Image 1 (cartoon, rainbow over the protein chains, first blue to last red):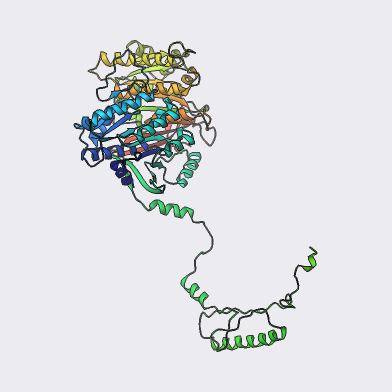
Image 2: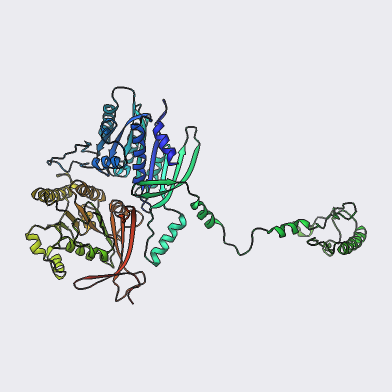
Length: 371
Length: 260
């Protein structure tokens, strides 16, 4: 499923459509969004290196990590960093985002330094400039990655940030856009705005809801939080025709990066915890089922050589009396003959005569109510 | 680099190893009933021990130098002497107030000055003895007071922290910050502490005992190490829980239940 995202980012956009956009969101109980971000960044990088992708390069807007961190990361994941100047440009919004280091020489040999991140128009034009420099005059496209929209939202209003992302998505040269956001640092509407603009939403959550509850329990009792490097990875895909698909997977963060696995273990846990705890059996055993099938229902005199008579409630009392005697006689007869047959169930049905002295008269039963 | 704060107990064992916290951000969270200041004292003492060549830049926002001098003396560390030989740099910010209005850079101005001061110390120390490759630790004793100085604007504080964070990646510094976890209302104002938790590599939480007061146990300490690397080279998020007792000249750490 993480593969689905990698493929979507690789394939890029169709002419006349917005570029695919991916939101990666996490929260403090499972803060591994950055690992997921680097996973998709590296997968896209290797696709670009191999020439398999639509985009010819990546412009990375780095807010939370230094450019050298990213170069080291790509190197450690076995991606040829020496050729990276051909396909990777880093807009360094990390080293000096607000120009506080004024007067001191800031060397940013690895990335293009951005000294005023509050100016999003400037940011947008430098992204385009870097991208066009990289892919050359041809009509080739490039991808844009933003390593933290959270930081961006600290510096600029939501409307400006969403405007920037929307401009990037609709630009002719942009193949795909993806970004990371910490969902618990923003209002729900902020997250919703970004999710509306993305064709894929990947969210990282702790293992189960039950685990979350347990966590708070243990916090209060033993004061020991469960801190797991595993979790659930949900993906919501929006197709062009409006179809929405939700997929779920598990992830595990290791030193070499995040690993995704389709694991049924969670489903087991979920179904176990969802099934109500009851004291009785909900299902019948094989014997109980066969016994139930053998029960002769009282309305039919089955397998006794008689015609099938179903009580239709329209016979007179005298008819009923004779009928009752024959029925009981036939029952006792049957009991004799079938005594050796095991598991033959019967239901003896006698009409409760007191209540229905006059069966099915046309009298209105609610007559005495005086409505 | 490979040895991190796994436990105060094993931390003592690794005291002699230099640059234990290099390039790491350590967040100490405490509460009003249980002060986490002793963790800070512990880290100062450890950084200034004879075996270590670390330099501490201490940004004091809540307590004066004399306070720390007295406490560290009890712990067997002479801060005055350390200050004279340049291993302990004390930046007194008790009266930090960010100017109002449009003069300079507004509210952020005071924080910009503070950052430039720290940066200058870092660069001076890094350039005087580059061959020693000394690790520099920047400590702040109460982040919430920085927020007060910035007229309650957590954005400026976060910008300031971001710049301090750039020191960790560019100059190999480490950052130790103390903050209070119970002063933020859970609905609105918790973003600063949450942001810090995202930023931090090690979170140390000091809390009172849930079972109430006890004479032998003063509180409990939860240490979360996000990037601990085990002996097989795999990453593990290590989480440890200890009880502690703050004594006159030391702190005792022990596992829950190991004391009567």
